[in-house]
Image 1 (tube, helix red, strand yellow):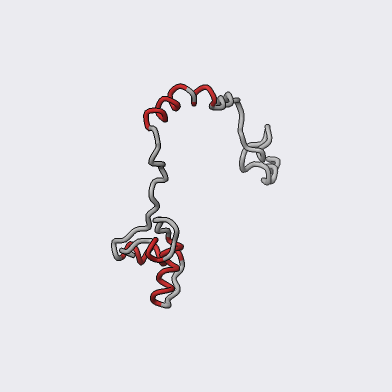
Image 2: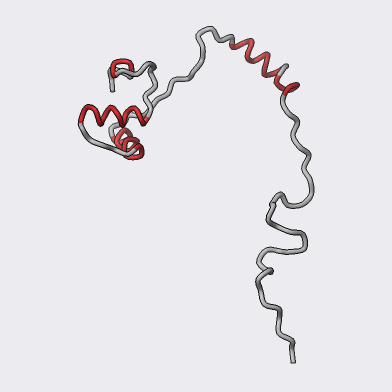
Length: 108
């Protein structure tokens, strides 16, 4: 793992849990689940890694300007809040827990 993903035949430097699992299987002929791979990595103070996918040509100043000036204009406005429940299953006039109860017995 110290040699990196390129040394083991992958096209990029991402070290995903699935790739580590496959590498362990190739090198040691042992099969782990993805969860087991994660636990094994943590036990040995390793982690999966995925580099930030930022282009070398990225213009950080241009991105900040776009976020401040353009994004607020193109972002969809939020829907106004409306009174009532957003649940599709609740019906007006029915409170929770009273639907399936027996009616009270008449007092004598």
